[in-house]
Amino acid sequence: MKRSYKWLIGATIAGILLLLFIFIYMNQSPMMWSEVQSDEDLDDFIKQMSTEEKVGQLLMPAIREMDGEPVTEMNDELNEMLGTFQPGGIILFRENIQSRNQVKQLNEAMQKGSDVPLLISIDQEGGIVTRLPYFPELPGNMALGATHSADLARETGEVLGAELRQIGVHIDFTPSVDVNTNPNNPVIGVRSFGDDPELVTEMGLAFMEGLHASDVMAVAKHFPGHGSVNLDSHYVLPVSEQSIEELEQVEWKPFRKMIEQGVPGIMTAHITFPNIDDSEFTSRKDGLPIQTPATMSPKIMNELLRNEMGFQGLLFTDSMEMKAITDHFGPGEAAVQAVLAGVDVIVMPDHLKVAYDSLAQAVEENRISEERLNQSVNRILQAKLKWIDESEVDELDAAVTNRAVELEKKIAQDSITLMKNEGSVIPLTAPVNGQISFVSTNSQHLEKLKYALWKDHKKVTLILLKGDALTEAQKQELKKSEMTILITDSKTVIGEGDTGWEQSAMNETIRHSEKSILVMARNPYDADVLSEVDAAIAQYSDQQASFQATVDLIFGRIEAKGERPVERLEKR
Image (tube, rainbow, N blue to C red; front, side):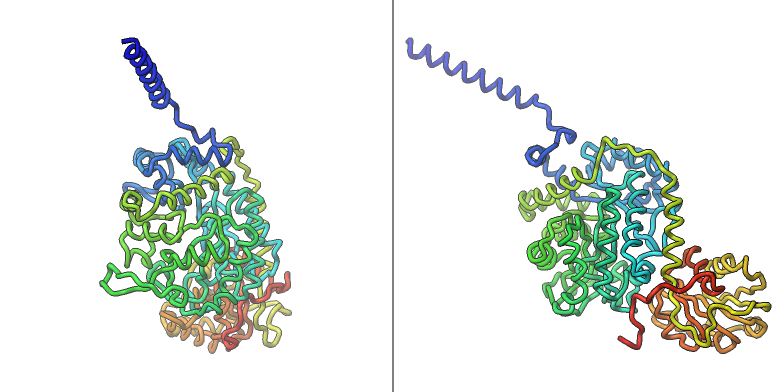
């Protein structure tokens, strides 16, 4: 009896203790993000996260529009999306941005709606890829390459970073360190610093240093290299036939050096590289086999980039809305295959809910292991600890814009390249008293050049080309002109693709001109095709500052300091 009594007391005490433990455990407050201060804290924070919360961290959707309207402020639909999917980040586009104050308020509102802070990102490369409508666009990477000035590249990164930081952006998807070895590349071109891997490496590193000096995370792109293909992955799935030796000598040099110098992020390329990975998927488009895009290739992302090259930072997909992916894969399987390959962040999933559900299901079915999921979540949260400072609220500083305006002018002047000057046409040694004709297929470029020239010469006529032959009236205007300035803005090479008519019209213009100057407002290869012009100027950009620098060169106010950062066509 005594024994039974003691046993009952012991069992009762044990039961009470167990209930007390359960009560304490069930009522214990979960760790807040603000409490994470160390790696141990981060490990504890991840352990308490649900699978769904972890999956959300892997997603970085765009919020261009909701209900058919641009998203420029917090609304019910955006708030619901943040609460439902708890994404790890957001990528902003021009549609989201009206002014400095507005976008800062939007970013702050999104952060308040998120339990774990968002990594807010943007594509603000400068040049032809910009998202801030109120901010100087700057001449871009190939113009920087033409200056051969790492200092200017560094200052560009610093100025862009200073603006992004103060509006609440943490990641800039730049620099593009693609080596533009193919003049017919329709999507890189002037987004590249040039076709010399050493120059691209030097400028890319300096650009990264500038961004980091302003506390904005740099992301090098597009690995394993997008510079050699002749198709645009926004519309099709390109194939790179380069050998591993060729890739090592050119495409991978900038990436290897940037990894050595600690680049925190890399973005993938939606391109197949059969000499690295010849595995295949079945395309949903037509049921035929396609080779594995780099974004979904474990051989490229995990074995090559992670293990062989030693990259330990955040790995981002390029936009998963691009047809290189959507034509061949459903949005769910595309996200799953990218994560299986070693990617951390799915940028712009084609369908957010489908990608979210598919990733969660893949974890539940152990296609994606808990260990693999935690690897990416850990890297993402580590990046948040490093690049997001919730206590810091920068006051908006409009002086950054003034600095950017001066930098834009400096780059424009230092990049201007005089590629041809037969008979020393440039600079003008005598005043032009008669008419000057401007000829282009782009009316905005005609107006920009007219504005730049206005204080020097007002007797101008604008000729907008619309077909492969000049009209009789246009021929008469050229006949009356002392000089003709032709403007091209080729994304590849004039005469290639659907621009054969433009080449014909430009050549006819040259034949009817007494003196002709070619101004290239984008790629500098057109001078190799329109070889009958008297002089050729590469300005690499269609910004007003670049047109002004061209006019200043023509009238002798500045000298041509730029050096062409890509080889002539005949040398290829």
